[in-house]
Amino acid sequence: MKKRYLIALIVMLFTLSISYKFWLIFKTVTSAKFDFYIFVIIAFVSYLGGLKLTDYLADLKDIEHQSRIEISFVLIFFLILFIPMSHINKDIKSNNENRNLAKYKPLFVEKYKLNYNFGNDFNNWFNDRFNFRYPLFVLNNRFKLIFNPLLETKDAFYNRKTNFFGLKSHINYDAKIFTTELQNKAGLNLRKLNEFCENNNIKLYILVVPYSEDLYIEKLDIKKNKTNKIDSVISSVQEKAGIKIIYPINELKEAKKNGYVYYKTDHHWSEYGAYIGYHKLISEIRKDFSNVPIQKESDFNISYNTKICSEWDRNFGIGGTFHSYFPYLENNRDKILDVQYKYYDNKNKNLLKSEIIDLPKKKQKNFYYPNGADLRVLQIGTSMNENLLEFTPYSFKNLKYIRINGVKGIPNENEAFKIMKYHKREILSFKPDIMILCLVPYNFYNLDYMFKEAE
Image (cartoon, rainbow, N blue to C red):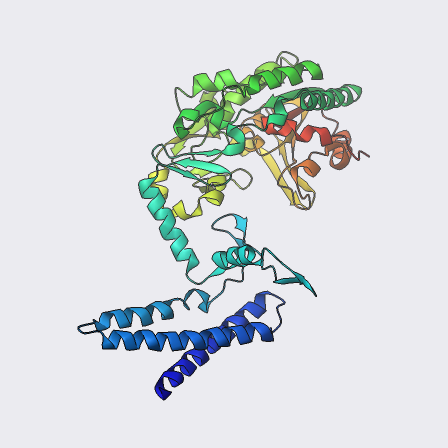
């Protein structure tokens, strides 16, 4: 009988020592203080558990022919329970999942107030941080890759059969974009921008780049809401703005028969797709400025590469956006990069002078090309401009590109679209003959901020 209590005491001390270690780790990531009541509960429960364990072991011993394997299994099982808590991840964000990890929320939110959701909160916190979570995360996704052809996160899809990636926001547009209110606001602000340009002798051209999902939805093998026709939205905004919107959807659909106009593992158009967009854009500009040269494919050295050229830094990889949502597929890059993309290198590249500026609240590229039309061009917009810049600088002598998203010191895209707040002086000092505003359909949401807090 004394041995029974001694074993129970040993179990209690072992449990308390492990709990103390867990509390020390716990303390480093939270502001938790030692709770005497919880200590008593753990001690009491572990002591009773020890007594119960000795009873169980005694019963096993008394049963004739009972295998010792069962005894070993019980002991190993309880020991294994302590492995997940032996090391707690202290990171704020999981780069592998592109999300913030759950924060610890205490049992007592204030001095005498209970957090009645403590069980769920603690479960979420522990599930995000327990020991060996990442290897299990990778293993789980390996199984998904084997058995499920369509991988899915909260924001993206990846079809492993076609190796095609898509963003959910590009597949089923937010219902707001189909409202008259949003289209009125977008059209009004584009009208105001056009008036600003006319008042300063600037000719405005608006280029809206389609989404890859609108051209390659079959590659994802998922249903797209057919009522969400973005073409009608563009027509509506164009009517309200009183200025033509260049939307090369038909040209890209025709061109995709000859090659990929978008990358399979990135949301940007490929250089081939940007070349098609460039031709459509310059063809419109030539209606007003007939002296603007348009680059032919014969003006470029054409090469092919399976890798994706990233936007700002122009480095090659599997696709920056894709990698942020499915980083664990990096090891499968040889299977994923299964397409030869067309890349363009102008034969007179040595004549092009360029300057790159990447500062807080200022992200620009400046170009000078002596063989271009004697015009000053301001190209402004989002990252879809980057591949377009493989072509537009060769049509004009002076081209200034202002990037308005992904800029240091500007926290979000709505703030970035305050063009008159951040870039009005730059525009007026540059005195462009032409302004090219290059956007994607989603940016119709952001246009409402264009003239807010203008100087």
